[in-house]
Each structure stands twice: as C-alpha cells, then as structure tokens.
Length: 182
Ligand SMILES: Cc1cc2nc3c(=O)[nH]c(=O)nc-3n(C[C@H](O)[C@H](O)[C@H](O)COP(=O)(O)O)c2cc1C
Image (tube, rainbow, N blue to C red; front, side, top):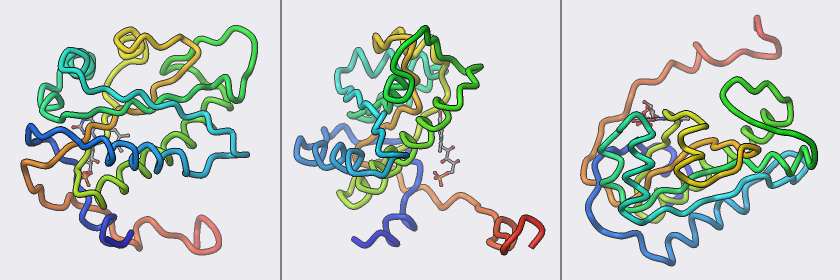
C-alpha cells in the first residue's frame, strides 16, 4: 500500500473484531514510531503496549468510560518523557502546564503516533486516537511518574465496521500563500 492510499482510507474505528494483533505487526508499529522525526532528534517518546483485559478496561474507564475501546485488542499509550529536554529539577505536568519544552515533546510524540496509525493501515489494522482523559487519572492507571505527559492512547486492531469518511474543510479554507493573508 502506498502512503497516499493509507492516508485516504484511514478512519477512526470504534468497533473491533476479537482477533489479537500479531507480534510481528506490533513490532512494525513500534518501529514506525521509532523512525519518526523529532526536534533535534531528542526522541522523547515512550510507548506502553497494553494488551491485558484488565488494563484496557481501566484505561477505557479513565477515558470517560468509552466502553467501545475495550473491543480493540491492543492499546499503545504514547508518552512524552519530558526529561529528554528538561533533565533535572521539579517537574509536575498536567493539562495546565505551559512549558515550552513540553510543547516540543507533544509535537514530536504526535508525529510518532501518526506514524503508528499509518503503518497500521498498511498492515490491515485500524486505529483510533484517544485523548479524552486527564493526566492525573491515566498516569495513575499506567503507573507513570508526574514528570511524563501522556500525549495519546492509540487503540488498534482489526476493524468490525467500515465508517464513512468524516467531513473536512476545503483546501481553500485552510491554505494560505506566502503570508497569513495570502
Ligand atoms: C488527538 C486526538 C484525540 C482523539 N480523541 C478521541 C477520543 O477520545 N474518542 C474518540 O472516539 N475519538 C477520538 N479522536 C478521533 C476523532 O474524533 C476523529 O479523528 C475525527 O472525528 C475525524 O474522524 P476520522 O479520524 O475518522 O477522519 C481523537 C482524534 C485525535 C487526533
């Protein structure tokens, strides 16, 4: 599959078959994250592979109880280890944090996450980004220290639905030329 096709056919999928994701495919997903670009090659992304029923249930619960999530056999929590950019000192991160370095990390880990999503398409897997949780709750469930930031949880598996494309703005609504007013 070429990249254009993967981009065009990807949908957020919220119904999954109860088929596990093969180990070789999981490795390719993680490799796609590893190879993504990051600012100054800082590579702050850390990835928690979540497959146990109990863990997926708890992650779904703290994600505003989005029960459908647990149908997906595989979650990958995409975590920014901000220590890659702020090595020492007190650091407690949450939704209110304004640190410049945190913003850089979120940008990097988001790119890594989308690499996973597009690689999944090529492997015949579907996915959905999840961002509807609080740092405090998701960190508690996953035992993540307060100086890390959970950028997203990706749910992955074999689709059991075929959603239509969601609407997008037209190009002339989002593209400027040379300057903002152009
Ligand atoms: C950062 C991010 C967080 C998201 N969080 C959720 C979520 O918590 N629950 C959910 O059902 N969908 C979530 N989505 C999926 C969006 O709703 C979806 O991408 C959007 O409606 C467009 O649909 P499409 O992905 O099928 O094109 C999230 C997407 C992104 C990029």
